[in-house]
Structure formats: structure tokens, C-alpha cells
Length: 61
Image (cartoon, rainbow, N blue to C red; front, side, top):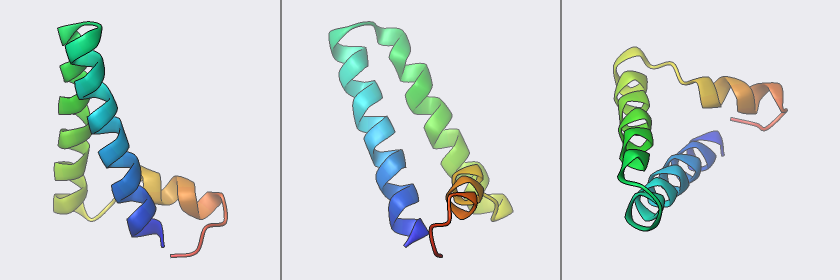
């Protein structure tokens, strides 16, 4: 369950930042890069802050 939520949040953040970059200001692409770096870091270290947050909120794995 948590994996689906993490993927959904990451996808939403990326889509929102791209839309904001096109409509508001190009610097929103830095947020897209930040999300991408966090996904890369998570794949290498097998640790994800969002997973820890979801666990503390009581959402099952």
C-alpha cells in the first residue's frame, strides 16, 4: 500500500511542478529535479522519508 502512495505522491509532485514551470515560472523545474534525486537516492539506499512518514501515520506496508 505504501509503495503505491509513494509513487502517486512522487508522480503528482512531478506533474504539478512541470505544470507550474510552464504556467508560472521555469524555476519550478528545480522541484522536479529534487523529486527525481530523492527517487534515485531511495533506489540506491533503500530508504525513503515518505515511507517513514506513512508508517508514523499508521498506513500499512
